Image (cartoon, rainbow, N blue to C red):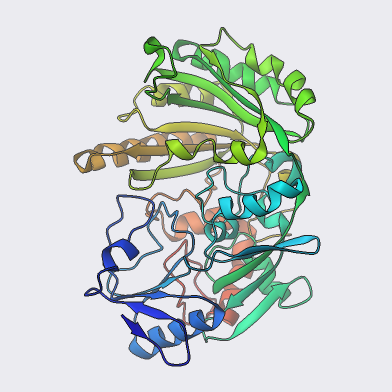
Length: 453
C-alpha cells in the first residue's frame, strides 16, 4: 500500500492483502481488477487521485457507497477513486451535509431522531452519491419529490483536480447538471440536502395477494391511486414471499402480487387512507402497520444482501394500461429466479411538478416506472437471467417512450441511444456543460454524456 505525499490517500494495489475486499461491490456479478484503488478521506485526496490517474494515463472510475448494480464503480486495469471512508453526516442549520461515500442509513440515523427525512434510498445500504446523481426515487417521492429536488449544493472535484462548490448561485450550470446527469461532471465529495418533517412513526403498506389475482390486483391498484394524495407513494409488485419460519409453511417461498408503500404523514390517517388498497382481493398476508421511520427505511435490507448476482433494468411507461398490466403479469410468470422482483412504482405528485428544463433529469410526465430487478445466486444462471431481463424490457418498450431510469441501467449496453432518449431536449445542454467541466471525458464509465465539440 502506497501513501501519496502530502495526502492521506492510500493506494491499494493487487499485492495488498485488502485488495480483493476493496474491489468488491454490492452486485456479486461484478468481478473487475483495477490497477489500483485510491482510498480517499477528503476532497484533497480525490484531487490527488485524479491527478495521479492523469499523469499515468489510467482510466478512472468512482466508487461511492458501493451499492452498484451496473458495476461502473470499478474499472479493469485503471484507478478506482474509493470514497467509502467518507461517510460523515451532520446537520448544518436547516440542511444536512453528507460525504460522498455515505449510505442512506447513515443519513437516516442523523435525521430520523429529529423527525426529519431526506428522500433517499429504499434500501438503507444504497449509496447516497449514485442514487442522488441519477435522480433518486424514495418512499416519500410523491410528497417531497426526487432526491435531486432536495439537493441544495454539492462540493465537486473536477477533472483538472480543482475543487468547487456548485449551487444555485455558484457554478449554476454544474449544479443543474448534477441533478440527474450522473457522474459525468466530477466527483461529488459532499452533498447538502434539504430535509422534511417526517415521523418519528409512519404507516407502511405491505399486502400480499395470490398470484392468480395479479392482473385484477394491479389494475385495481392503478385505478385506486389515480387520485392519490401526495402523502401516499405506492408500488405494485410481483415477487416471492421469503422462506422464513415466521410465515405459515404453505406461504414460504410462494409467488405473489403485492401492493407496498408508505404514507408520509399522520400514521392513523395513513391506515384509513390505505384501507382500500388492502382490500383489492382476498389477501394472503397483510403486513401493513405503523412503525418507526428508521425501521421502515431498513425493512427491505434483509432481502437485498451484498454478494447476490444482479441485473436490473427500468423503463418509464406512457401509462399503465390494461395491455401493459397483462404484459407485466405474463412476463412475471416467466421469472427464472424466485428472487427476482418485478415492481411498478407510482410516481407523479411532487415529482411531476418539476418542469423538464429545471433539472438535468428531464421529462417527469410518466406516472409509472417499471423495474425488472433480476437477482440470483448461481453463476451458471447468469445468461438465463440476463436474457430474461432484456427480453422483458424489450417487450415493455411499446408501452414507453424509451426513457430509462439510470440507477437501474442493466450493464449500460444501450449506449448513446438510451442516453439521448432519456435526456431528450436536455442532452444538448448537458454536452455543452460536459465540455466545460470535463472536456477530455475523463469521467466516462457511466451513462456517458460526450462533451460537445
